[in-house]
Image 1: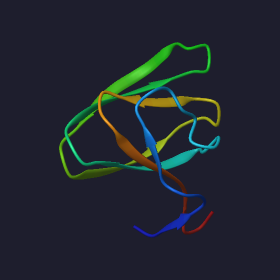
Image 2: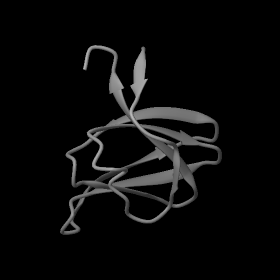
Image 3: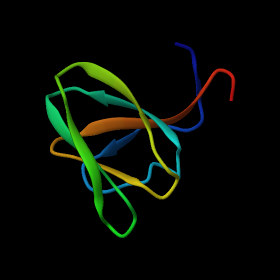
Image 4: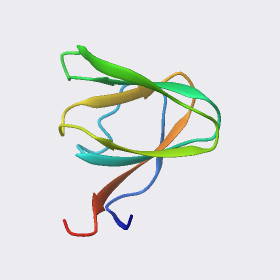
Length: 81
């Protein structure tokens, strides 16, 4: 999949909306549990990422991402956006 980088990578552990991104590329150097929540904050859901993995996370602009260990997050868009 091709992506368009829309910002710089940031390290996330506590709740962060990643510059109000709707699509985030997340890289986990170590195994982590990722939590997606509303701005309220109300947990939408969680998932686990193994060490060395990359995921694309789709979320609403004000939703936040948090993790149990450092997660490198970058605001991106798919190539057609």
